[in-house]
Every structure is written in C-alpha cells, then in structure tokens.
Picture 1 (cartoon, rainbow, N blue to C red):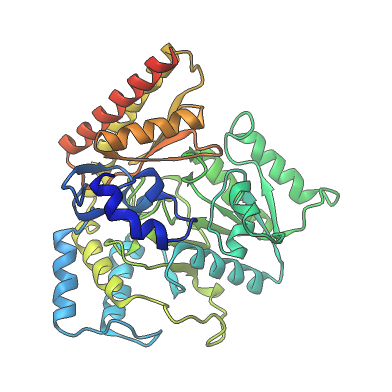
Picture 2 (picture 1 turned 90 degrees about the horizontal axis):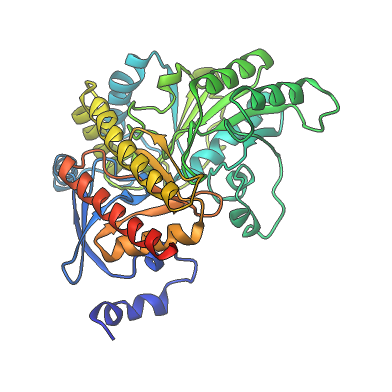
Length: 429
C-alpha cells in the first residue's frame, strides 16, 4: 500500500460515496499557491480546475490573503447574519463604484445562502412573486444547481434523477447551436410563446448561461443572446443570467454578458465572487424587482463577512481598469490555439467531430467520447495536471485555470495535456 493510500484510509472510510473529485485525483492535497497544488508527498500539480471556477485569482492570492488576515487580526466581524457591518458596506460601495456604475447597471443586492444554487433559488422566487406566473424557461444542457428549485432548471438527467421526486415549473427550450443555426431556436421559442396550443405556460422568466459550463462549454452567440433579450422585452418576460461560473472575469469581461450588450433583469453570481474560495453568493436585481418583505427569504449564512473583505480587495486590485480583462483574452487565445491543434490530432486519429470551443479562459476540448476524456484526465493527473470534464456524457475536457496563471505555467499544463492526448490516441490506433 502506497503512502497516499495509507493517508487516505480514514477519508475513504468516513466520507460519503457521493464524493467525486477525490476519485479523479486520488491523493491528499496539503497546500496550494497560485496556479499549483501540492500533495502530502510534495508532488506538484498545475491546476486547470481552480475550484471549478471558484479560484479565478489563484490559490492563496497574497494580496487578498493580506486583506483577510488584517481583518481577522483586527477582530473584524466573522458572522453577522444580515446585520450591517463595515465589511458589508465596503463591499457594496466598491461593487457599485467599480463594477456597476462603469457598466451602466443599477442593481439591488440580495445576499442569499453561501453557494450558487442558493442564488438561483432566490432568483426563481423573485420572478415568480413579482410576475405572479410560475413557469420558467430554461435550456438544453443547462446546469443551475442541485437544490430542488434549481434542479428543475437543470437539464442533465444524471442530476435530475437523483432528486427522487418529480421536478416542476420549468419548460426547456433548445440552447444556441442545439438546433441548426443561431436563429432556429429563437424562432421556436417565439412560436412557442405566441401559440396558445404550444403546451408551454407563459413564463415568469427566461434563465440562461451565456457559456454553459457543466453542459459542455457551449457558447451562445451575441446574436442569439440579443435575440433572447429582445423576446423577453417584447413579451414582458424577465431575463435571468446565471453568471456563477462564467462571471468574475472568466470569459474576459467581468460579467459574461457584457460583450452582447445585455442588461439582465437579474444576475446570479457565486464561485469567484469572494475571490479567495470562500462561500459567497448573491443576486443582483433590477431595483423595482426587490419586493421582498423583511425575512421572507431567510438563512443563517446570508453574506460572508470574510468573503466581503476578499471580494472588495479583488475588485480594487483587478477591476479598476481593463488590464486583467485584456490579459484573460490574450491567454484565452493561447488555450484556443493549443486546443485547436489538439482537435486536429483527434481528427487525424479518426475522431472527426472533435472540436475546441469557449470564451476567454473558459475553454473546452470536445473529444466526443466520455471514456476517452476520462482517460485523458487520469493520465494528466499522473503527469502533474489537474483538469476535469463536462458535457452531457463527460466528453469535454475543460480548462478553468486561474486568470493569473503565468504563460509558462499555462503552456506547461497544455504540454502535459497534449502529451497525454497523443498517448491515448496512439492506443486507439
């Protein structure tokens, strides 16, 4: 039995079988810095997972860590329910000045539970309460969380079946590219909304990801997003953009919908919102939609003061100018180029439909075969790279590296991935 197996015995014995990432990466991690993880044997791994998009600024970012340690050293409030604190005020004022105002946004902020699915649940309640309608439109391959309301808007049957009860209140429509062309799904949606015999109840809202993460790095075109926004405006339907994984700079701009010029009625955010991997989720809503009565949506962890501190530091450090946004787009081109080269290797090996897709540093390599993708992930781990898969059958190898990763680290990780891909394709041959 190896040292790694000995050290993991208690973990395997005590933790639920529901665990996933520890199966893909069977070692015990001890420390992390920047774009790298280290296990108890001091093996070094380049991290292309980054907390599933939660660590946009890397592990233990020193500037965010200093702000956090200073706050804790000064006995700053750690937990305050939804009471007002200095940390909350500083976060909200910075959010307004650095993020909202430069983008022409005027949102109220609701602090819900600590994770993304809580933000989705709150958004669904908001639109149903405000409009008096119950149905919500979601899309093929969508993933919005696994609590019951959010799960109803999630398309993947793997997650839906685990609910053990029927989900309700949601109608699914084809996402951009699911059918031929950008416009066909828009035409289908328009027809459905205007045909009293379509069988689809008139919706309170349309909920979408501009780039579907868990669904396979499916990218909605600007034309399609603008078409959805136009349909919402025409029919008095609220637009919710789920920016939980694709936001906070992941696609290049702070919000993933900026490129399309959208101003959603509601935005849900979490993951990298804290900047430091701390649990934190929020709903940004149009002011007139904030019709809650005090205490109607409750919870013990509504706003994390430690996360307020690190999020404020991240906004001030990285979003008062467009330097990081430009660098994310530049690094995204590096990954795009390398993934396209890898797709061509797949084509040469007979996998004709393999392709690269994504925006910014939210990138996917679709190798068509989920088993092949799993072998690539396993081989990458053995060679010092942490990377995961996504898509309806886990067939897409997904890059979600830190936005601050160095070019050398980025290329080193891509070199490992290409090496393993070549080895697996050679086995197929």
